[in-house]
Length: 244
Image (cartoon, rainbow, N blue to C red):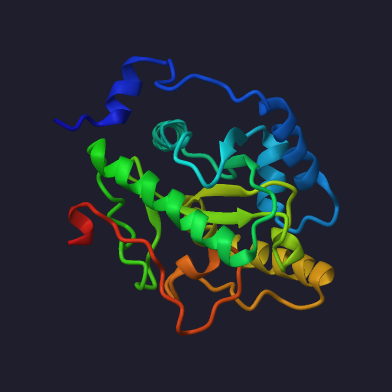
């Protein structure tokens, strides 16, 4: 029988999958240095790092499911912690040590492979899909859901065509969707979004054509960072009740 993992974690502070990758310190420092660079455009990530709420999990390979339980465990904890004490600018980055020579289509395929695996584990663990978003990747209101909280993913890797998505290791950054809604309700979302786009344009020379607001087009098109056309179809399929 499936067990609500957030209930289990509320009675035990210990991680269910506590091992640490041998390169944790190295990859964490590498990402922090990247975010701290003046050219890095995402002010939200910079704010999270400054607050000490940019958490990093070092993993082995993005083309392997070996670390997926550790990743899902961390996502469950982030969701539970956020519900207990909502706060802006929390971010969770999964930095994979290998492989480092992926093309954009290869990276995109692996991002969705990991997403599918993580989502399947969410279903297996009895988690409900966040009712505020859609589980259909073709829906303009689509977001991923882990532990009952919606998440937006940002992919980074060495061979990204957009400089803002270029990083020395393949990386998946998970951001809580509710944070964007809070910023929008406070009137801070649009100014922050514009600031990021201006900074991105200064580095890349053009504005990112893939960026859109939630509810306009599916955010699934933005996850990997690769520019896709209208014929692109997301390979993700939610296996729980919300996807039926």
